[in-house]
Amino acid sequence: MRLNKQEKIAIHEKLLKHKIRMLSKLWERIGVQRIDIILKPRSAPLKAIHRAAKKTGVQL
View 1 (cartoon, one colour):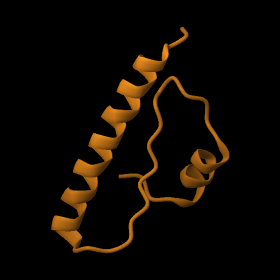
View 2 (spheres, one colour):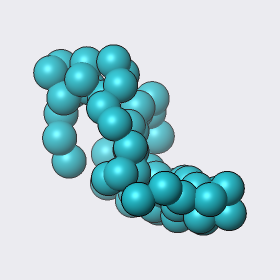
View 3 (cartoon, one colour):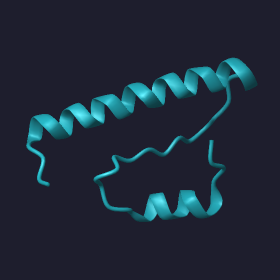
């Protein structure tokens, strides 16, 4: 399935909103600190950053 530019933008906007919500909830629970949240659309292939995060990160 190929997505057009508008569909790709909509997916990335949704991911960004989800990431911001998730980060704000984490900060409420554990206080403000540096946290890297890695998200990717299901349709996107795994990149090196995703593999590294799966290997060394903490899944939430």
